Image (cartoon, rainbow, N blue to C red; front, side):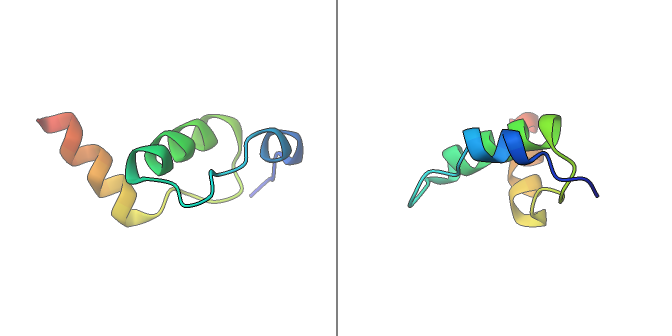
Length: 52
């Protein structure tokens, strides 16, 4: 998978990020970088929230 170094440098994960912050960061990450997938637990949380 390819790392988008520029995006990572400009978009650091907040320190002690809340679950919502982590979800938002990972959603943006998936759109801008292909270095790794969203963690499964967060992906499940996103899917669960979409069905509510």
